[in-house]
Amino acid sequence: MMPPSHLRLGVNIDHVATIRNARGGLHPDPLRAAALAAEAGADGITVHLREDRRHITDADLEALSAGIALPINLEMAATDEMLAIALRHRPHAACIVPERRAERTTEGGLDAAGQHNSLQPIVARLKDAGIRVSLFIAPDARQLEAAARLGAPVVELHTGPYAHAEGDAEAMAAELARLAEAARIGAELGLEIHAGHGLTFDNVLPVAALPELAELNIGHFLIGEAVFTGLGPAIGRMRALMDQARA
Image 1 (cartoon, rainbow, N blue to C red):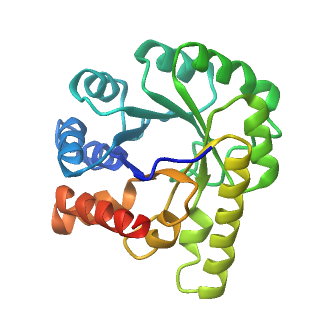
Image 2 (image 1 turned 60 degrees about the vertical axis):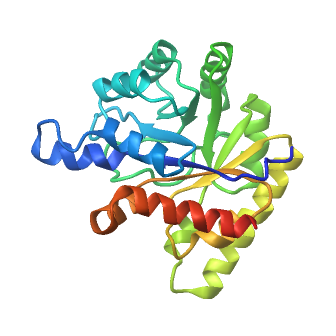
């Protein structure tokens, strides 16, 4: 499956809600962040409704669903509760991610191969509802093959190990090679390939240049950078770097 020449940018606005929740109240407003992201060139908005509601809340998801025109990508655990929420709101996409309450952020990819029997009915019900299903997985051939068997049309490759290797050129090159090989294998399996986690201005170019990729999802870095430059300029610069990589 060949991706479009335009590499889509999904902006994760979870940590706008994290800042709000640190103090309580209404500010900063994730809906306002989504509107700014749209103006700055984002192609979609990603939110992770975690089981403990540590950042995005149900009310945020309702407000975003009603208030923005961009496609919403709902990151969700493979639970009955999250499935019911996804089926009620009908986001454009649902990305199934592993989730543990003790982790600060999503650590590692989903074990699509080991959890086939529990994932299959969730993937099927989301697809039946017209929701684009994605699995957040490690760049590993076994996981890609499992995603294809499950019938998930999209995978998001976990770029965390690549990003965390910053400062070690040899390790970064090895992780980039893993991503490149996984993207190639996934495309051969007929999957649409996305990537994300830990991407920054300094490390995004080699990933964005991988020709099989159709979308990057980036959040924490952009929200952090917005403290210094504003959200619009931060997203605009990331968009420009992605376009540069594809040019």
